[in-house]
Length: 96
Image 1 (tube, helix red, strand yellow):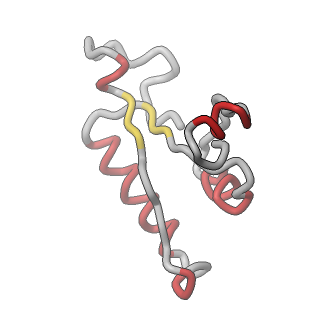
Image 2: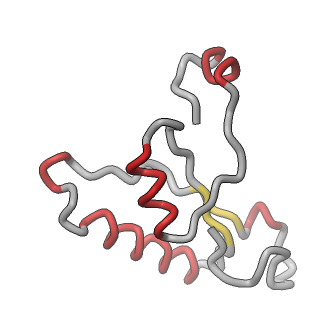
Image 3: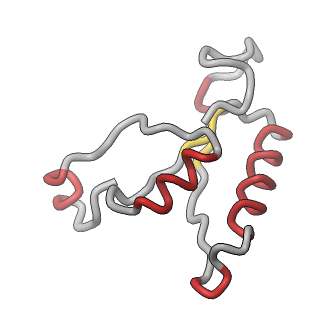
């Protein structure tokens, strides 16, 4: 997801690796789902990222987690790449 500055960067002089952030483990307990809590957390996280000068945010999503995919797409995230089943199996985890 682009947070600002365009695809190529804002010319900030910082390498892309310092302008790109990984968002890990956005989790909401089952009883708190569908209450807007996840949306509020994402909105806050993205605002903090922009405040820190982050231009791109990325996440990993398990390939068959349709709900998470839709959630992130609603925030402007898009699929950049998908792991092969063989690669994921080699790491003993679900395909992302």
